[in-house]
Amino acid sequence: MSNTSLKSSIYLLIGVSAVSWFLLAYFNELDLSKIKDFFGLIPKVVSIDLLVIAAFVKWGWKFKIFRGWLVPFPNLNGSWVGFIYSDWKNPKTGKKPDPIPVMLTINQSFFHINCKMRTSEMESSSYSEGFIIDSDRQIKIMAYSYSSQPRLSLNERSIPHDGTAVFNIIENPKQKLVGKYWTERLTKGEIILHFYSKELLEDLPESFEKHPVTEDENYR
Image 1 (tube, rainbow, N blue to C red):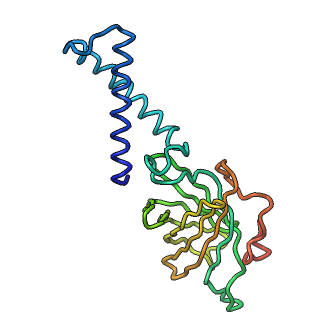
Image 2 (image 1 turned 180 degrees about the vertical axis):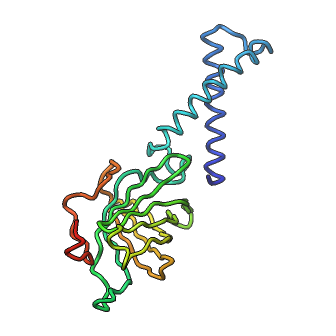
């Protein structure tokens, strides 16, 4: 969390505490000028603060009203679809493949983000994720490292591997993720994704095009 967001969080929590203190004193007809009445409300005020924090962490951070001044990162929850543009060359043809249809599902909370990418030939899961956000420098980046597991029938030409993906987050005029990736197999490429659904889809949409490299005998 940036320093600005941390300060905003502290100020907001102080404000919530102050309002809670005065409202509790008012409805319970207490005199805050008396030490006993003032400090006697501490347990209730702390309980209210904890409830507010819990509600914010669970649901509130997603509301756009908090974006920027309190929540520095965007809500990317959902399914994103697009294409991979790989520099890998097919050993049979010596050519790069056509764009590969791909889907990225993002499961995000206030404290954590998880990314799972799927094509018809592989599935990859992130194990280290994070944001790089600097509004003054117009930087909005999501980056993660992942482990990729191709289908077993494709192991002769596509082995399990690790890699890293870095996406620029574009929110206006339309939501889009534009990124690049590289792997320990010494392949790299670009990925362009558009927001598809708020749901975390567990399988590729039926409208997906066929993978350009998949052999007929391996098509599922």
